[in-house]
Image (cartoon, rainbow, N blue to C red; front, top):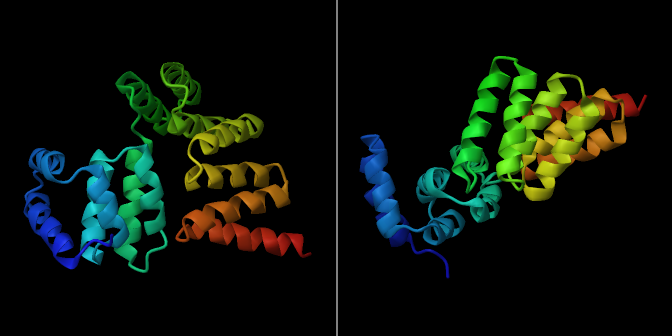
Length: 219
């Protein structure tokens, strides 16, 4: 059943003051008591534009893996801010697993990656995957580490592992395209890039890469 206009209005009115005060604790309490994930997904699907934005933000805080399908649809929404909120929410969900120690290892790995301590980062991602073998983002982040070490074969394998667990992961699809491009495998690179862009039409760097590779293949 489509979400009625007054339902969207009620949600925005309940949550907006908490957002303006940046009251995360109060927001989480309201969401837990009044707006479970199923209702947030309904707002994402059928709510007003404002409700979609706020619901996407809320799912970024409390959403689970099954919410990614609803959020992915918003990446093609005509409203730019809705797109951005949905993308942010997806990354937030991807970085959370059901295993808190695995989340901790992922965060430590990302910190090491930012410092360009690639081997150190890989150790943390390995530990995250030992704790939760289904943690798609740990595979994706390890793929980045292999990529920065110019080990494109291992990076490809980890990108595929991430995609197998999270098919809508446009970041992993784009990473797969980058690896194939470095290996001069233009057909596979184009295929991966197109899939990333099909999921998230706002990846300008991927659109540019597709244009460049298509130009190369036509020479």
